[in-house]
Image (cartoon, rainbow, N blue to C red):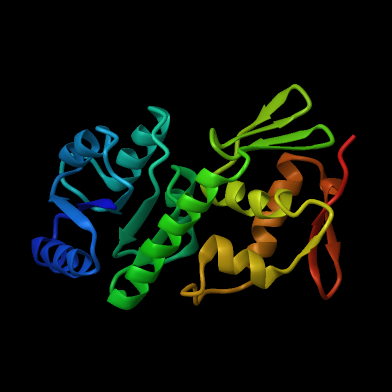
Length: 222
């Protein structure tokens, strides 16, 4: 597995690189947003660790540019900021996960492994799931409702994916947290409800049913 670290704090970048190399990854490091975009755009990396506050081009713009160019490499964003607004902005640009500095190195490794594991699992599964008039292509990360394509953020897509691969079954909030945010997530578990609510607005409210005390179930489409 080959990782790219885009981080302008050189001591932190070197420390992370040494640790991840010891974990068995091949690691490259750059300290500038423009260089990070160029290197990540080569398509040779399995995951990018991307700081937000970068010279040249900030992490949000790097992430957005990669997604706009069709690159689906997992992106773990690092930020010195804190707050839901920053998380939402990062995820809306297409990031898969984020960590707020200062963070535990053990947590970072857990997030990296979880993102790589989910990417590997997706590669071996059937990429297209059809449920009534809902079609979810997990390879292309595209969602269609009838003839209309629905635009989702990375986290919205990940939550929907957990429901669609278990269509007709009840999926608990804990299962969604484990697979979408992984076990290292220590924030508010009600974040799942926020994303389910957003999915209901973007799709159809009746598609995702709340099973009280158990979780959520994707219902049959039209």
